[in-house]
Structure formats: structure tokens, C-alpha cells
Image (cartoon, rainbow, N blue to C red; front, side):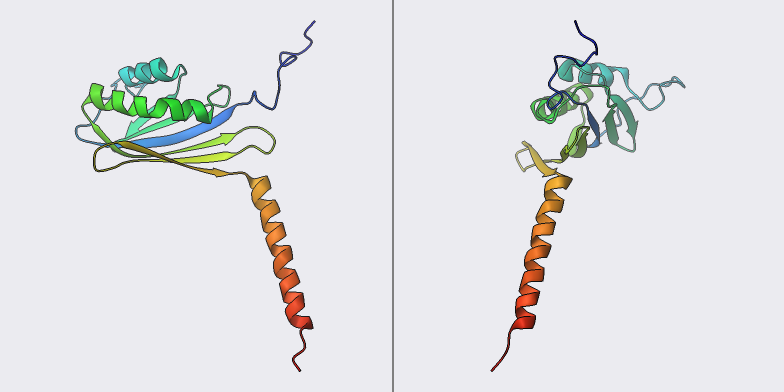
Length: 165
């Protein structure tokens, strides 16, 4: 009998991830919804992202940028993003007749010792999408800094103890 909803789950692999970022486009602006409730959004863009990524994002369009974010209740991992983003960009370009030149996305895993990811999206001269990823884990970063500081301190002590004859 399950006592809690997470019984039977491995909590090391089932966790939420916060996502936020933008795609910068040029050409004509994407037509926005005029309704007061859904100002600066586009229903077709919402549907496109939902169909490809199988998840609902919060989308806001302003100054030739499509801002995309995700609440922590949803399960969308970095490998899902890497799998979906190139298809999302090409579909947006085809459907809305815009050219996406640049984008940045940040993701933070909501787990103990979770990673932070930063993705930069650019295009080369042949318009091929280039996705660059940087990973930061604060725990690893701090332990490396402690080791580096300790080795610097040891070198400083060795220099102080050095006697010139």
C-alpha cells in the first residue's frame, strides 16, 4: 500500500527543473493576441510548443523576443530540451516566417546538489543551429575551490619557509 505519492519513486531521478529563456527573432513580429487576459502571447505558438515538447510553457512575446519559462511542477529535463529545441526553432521559423538568430536558456534542477545549465543558441553561416551547453554544480565548484585554496596556502607556506643561503 502506498502511503505517500512518491513511494516507489527514486527521488534522485524524479525532480522538477525550472526553465527560463528567450529566442530572439528578426523579420515581421509574430502576431499577438489582442485579448486583455492573453496580452503578448500567441495561441498558435503555444500549441506548437505543446505539440513538440508535450508540455505547456508560459510564453510572452516582447521586442522581437519570445520569452519561454516553465513552472517547477512540470517534469522537463535537460535531455528533453536538447532533443526538442532544434525542432521547435525550425517549426517557428517555418510557421511564422521569422528567422531566429540567437537564444539563451537557463535551467536549475530542484534537487539536492542539482546542476544549473545554461544553453546558448546561435547559427553558423549555413544557418545550422548550434547549441552550446555549460553546466555548473555549486557543490563541485566549491570543493574544487577549497582544494585550490589549500594548495595555494601550502605554496605560500613553502615560500615563507624557504631560506636563501
